[in-house]
Length: 502
Image (cartoon, rainbow, N blue to C red; front, side):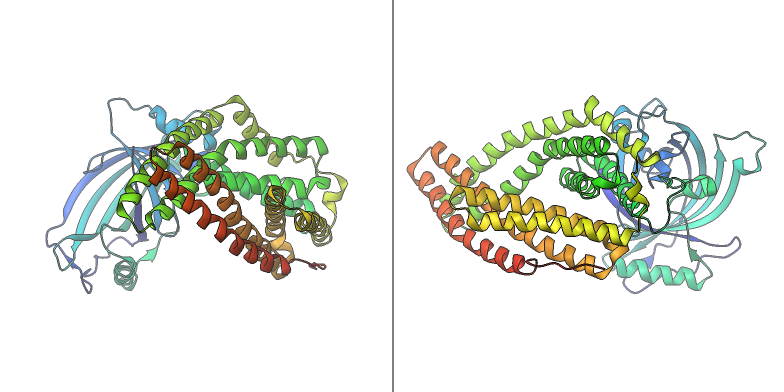
């Protein structure tokens, strides 16, 4: 599947308004516009699970990029697009169904909207006569396939203008946008034609249960769990599409969820909380190896590249790539198998059930500020105990103890993050300080693992020179570890004491 990032901005332009002169500094308009006819059929579930996640899946005919298009949010004015060939059938291809499985949760994908567009394309070229943007003036006719033909909302028509960068930069996008707004246009409220067609039919991805008071601890917990559950599903789509950093981001999100459940355990049924914590820990472990190996490959190759001898660089980089490539492939295979497993499917269902009907205890009804403040204080005490244990440990036990401190710092960071909307700036400051400890110890742990790899590569070296080279890198890594411990000590000093955040 072909993947790229689309940068575009959509404008609503009243009928009868003529497009303004789009020539701007460093870009001129090709004289003759091109008019094309496009037909796109959008697929979604009965409750529009994809659209509620700001994801669109369509089969489009016409133009130069006909085919299956899966679009994911990627930031302001940006969407990540995945393309597959049109093919003969109209059923959603299996790879795309698998990609969005975390969003649809087993529901059937069906055709929901047909969009017919008469598009007039104005191409902007730069001083080198290469295309830098396209301005598409669209007349849109929409038919809701999920509604009876006599429903007035089943057929809609409107005009919109899309500005898509094809080589230009953000400054060009702003300049063209100014021309359109000066002519009476305004930035559209919808992200896609499908979103506008569905209008008010789209509820939030998760609806907060009735009876939760606005300032209650249970409400603060539910809001955080809902946000992270949505992100977990979104990150899984990225993992299944093989996007860079997907496993890492999904693993972090699973850890955020697990930390929130652990910190807020008294607010929920004990068995439910512990079960979900255990399953999220399992998921994180299944994803962790991919990211750890990716980080280690980059670290080792960067160290090898810093060697002064070109011969040594070539001789050492080859075994690094070879050894890590084998392990990475195995780790990626295990991660995919975990995502396809019954256990993972049941975990997703459990999270959905938790949000739909959270098994709160009486403590969840208490004020969020008081409850979260106490839970953070307890989490900090756990962190402080591990710091004290690391101070007393020596040798390899010291490295293990520091790794335990890092885990405690992560939990403290995510607890403060969860409390930030309630406790404000003090929670944000605590989050930043805990993150500094985590970062310093992350570098330290990477150094420990790198030394283990250098030892392995040195033993497997095919020449004395290469073995010596890996031994030298081991020594440099060991010398550098002291710097990470200094950074850790400075970061811990900021967290040695904690008072009420209220």
